[in-house]
Length: 607
Image (cartoon, rainbow, N blue to C red; front, side, top):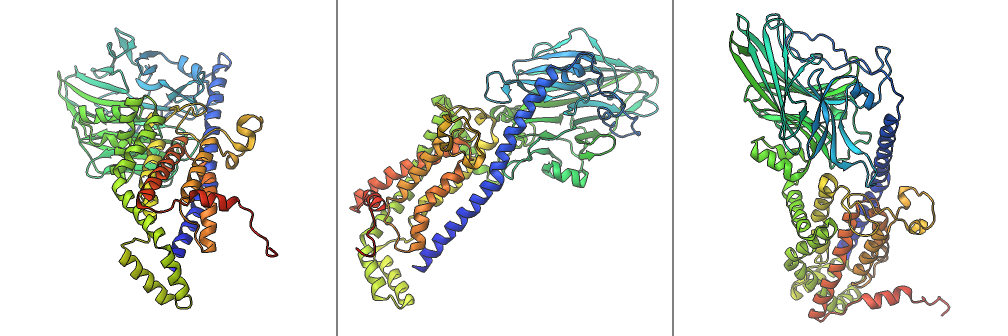
């Protein structure tokens, strides 16, 4: 049939497009990610071995204009100094230690800046000796990344806390969930600033600033907060994930600005807000500011090129007046850590942070991706293994769609029963395609057959497939999650390859030749599923029928192993389901005959 032929040609073109996308985009991206991780590990190792006495880069800050957020530090080396290693940069300033169940690091007493933070539960690779993730780094480093809270004053206020302010520790000098840290600073105009840092056992800091006016006249000042980053991820994110500047404020709601976009446009300034949050997000980590006092503030997302290129998400509150002899308190929360779904959701609900769950990029189809994650996560809590959770999720999805799939397979079985009548119609109207089509349609109507019924099982997999792909790609819960055997990271491709005999031959292979065990299993199950049906008589259809499993094997090899395992398991369940339904309908299962015919020697023309 012409319509059927067009349908198969469309499938072939779709597979071709996906294959080209896989070859020219996904595979290079995966390779670049591995290289970025290798470079990061190498950089950390070099920093640990850096020579003692290396001088840190300049931390001088230009004097801001009145009413403006202070500028960022100069670039390492711009003052003639040599950029320091991380340990040397940390040792160059006095600090308050941070030690929580999830975090370790320190607060820089110069600027009271949060610029040293490691994640205790996360490492760069699955290697047990891999270093911890360094989320925040001092500004003296090329990878400088920090969060800072300060004030913008005027002539009447005198010097107010900013990037160069050296704070004094009052009492306890170690920040833990049980022991807050208080810092103080008094200026020449009689203003005393008390800053209290507290932190929970996860990733949320609370910065409470109290301004005491001991002078004789009222003073007015504004509170600011900024997240500043001097580098960006070594590998650009793909379309399914947002990395860059992000926030939810005012009537605009969710704002997402990729690094490339903000580099081009320089600055985004949405309307003022009294609630919300803003910051910088990576694939798995984020640093955000949450103004909590309901004081109107102006958010901004910017890229600066003066002195040293940098990305910045910041806010500046409306002026606050502190009368003589009085005090005022402002509070800001800082999230700095892993984007774990349960914890991000808990912060959104318990602290009433508007749409904070959107810090995780669930995408436009959040109504599919989020339920998919919760289903997998529920199964994980039961089985204790995300690989088994994916297998169990597949069974649940198959059960949900069973009635529709049952009708589809039953219709396919009925089509096989009427194949003799279909062949008879083709022969009878071989020279009249119009009458052939009409006769076929009448046959379908009489026998109550849907000619596209076989497409539904595949079509139903597509939204589930992409939802699972999104979940595997964006959620940190899947990062470094092991299955069994050689699969130690379900979010990464199968590391084996048939082309080096699955590691027996010690040679490095390009990504396009990394066809591992699970992609082969997926291809085999897809091949068997397609052989459950009769081979199409049309040569074009038959070619697609034969080569599609091979194409999909190569195409899927670069996808996360968890996704490939899902597809293989789903194929196996579909084979069993289709076989049971066909047998129940009295239709012949073509699998064995098709396999025999495939390997049977074809007679030569002379024979």
